[in-house]
Length: 541
Image 1 (cartoon, rainbow, N blue to C red):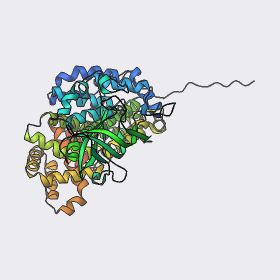
Image 2 (image 1 turned 135 degrees about the horizontal axis):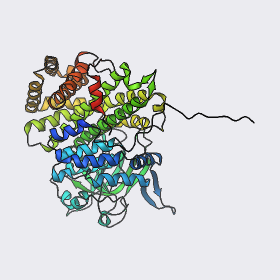
Image 3 (image 1 turned 45 degrees about the horizontal axis):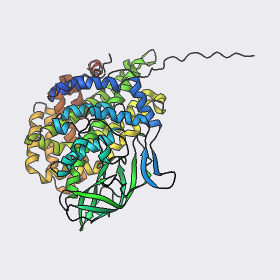
Image 4 (image 1 turned 90 degrees about the vertical axis):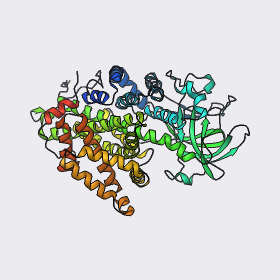
């Protein structure tokens, strides 16, 4: 009988767990100070410790292994149009509600605190952020409307309630969105869903039609676009009618998505669904765009969080893994790659929190203009850039990163959604051009403020002058180079934020890599401050 002896594997990297996502990130701590949110540090530290615990990391894994299931009919054949989720999903949402990420900033003005918590949660499980960001953005869309006052006790409650029941029986609620249809996508003018008035004393309607993407189908209500008298209005469509019966919002199927498996998106039809109009007749697109604009900021924060987690996983791996006689993290070429990823990650974080700060400061004309011009640009660049950067993080792991048992696979699958959702790249770039064309006063505020910040660095000053020159070209040429214009705007903002808030050597390294040497190719620059950059990037306890 032959006995085979198996050697214990060596040079394998242990799982990263039981670490604090906040305390290992000095730049995030500095950002809270810079944007007048230092009081949020204890909450972020406590939440960062929970998110990095083995228990919560297992919840995230379980929520993605046990996918939501459509439960369209009961056993006896009656429609119920429900979606069932693993209990881990509800635990993750309860954490977000407990921290007030779903709505509290609209009451207390602490948008930077909320952005930091959102950014931290994205590093552990991104799917559970979808219903939270929808709810948060719906509050923005409903500002100043009587309906918000009626729903406020449930929307602002931090006691998560995932039961499928009329809102009169619930402790809290969530609101989703139904905007696009299969024939139009981003071109919502081609929508065909229509509304018929059924009430005289209040704007009560029945909806007929469909939505191709119905975000967060188990939300307690959705804001939906539909035609009324040949004009599109915005409608509040609850899952249950006020009389306690199920509304006629019928799930056709769940989308088989590329990204996270924890969340559900659905196709639905409206077969006389009860609805209330919110806003004025024909004001549907402006109303729902207030929701969309807020979700776009969360796309930036979510992508920055995914990128941060990719960087942390890459650095953790590189500091343990031995290659050719020394640590992978000490190999010069790997240091160049990791430094580039660290710069990309920190610049994305500063940009996301700067935009959140602008949300809280919209009475300031400069901040209001900054939000209008830079938010769509940031969504284009950060969300798109994170895809390539996370792919590089996977390469650091090599073949180990390419298997679903490792965390990088889920990060890479998730990354493209933020670039597509709520307006893909071209839509964002055209929105930037539209802002420059329509808001001359805001354009002056943004460009002059940015030019002042760039003036001390000749490289940035030259890049700024070229941006202004591009914006003076005919509209057709501007459209052809819209991505170049948008990218330049974002990189200039990121560079000036780093100069203002980060150590000088970080800002100087970013400018060299993004404007002088490699034009943003990851790993194509040499960093004289590599050790300092990498020590700053990830500081485990």
